[in-house]
Amino acid sequence: MLESFYNRDPRSPEATPPTSMSSTVSGATRNVIITYEHNRFATDTIVTYERSTDLNTWTAAKPAATTITLIDFETEQVTATFPTNGTQLFIRLCVGRIGP
Image (cartoon, rainbow, N blue to C red; front, side, top):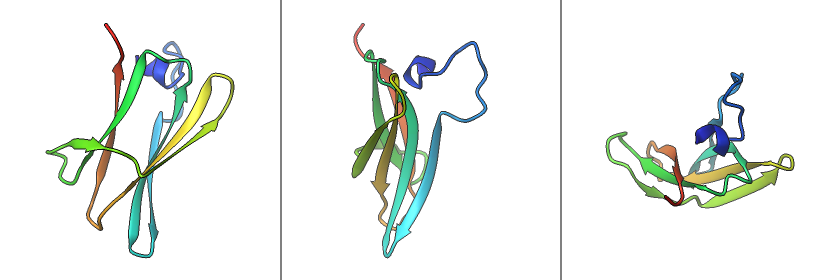
């Protein structure tokens, strides 16, 4: 399922990870940014995000901003930005299947 979601070939090893994370600071505002490529035609999958400050307790997270850039006919790059409150923040990407 993940190979389809990320639009990767399961028979071929990849040189790069499917997701990347970074952080930015602007004044008192710190953001965690997650970027990944997504198969536009993987319509049987859904992505959600979760956040944690301690890696034990995870809660649903909604990005403050999401940017989608078309890479090619099948692939788009998604960049999701999550503000922190000055504390450490961990974000995880959850991919699930829609339907039976």
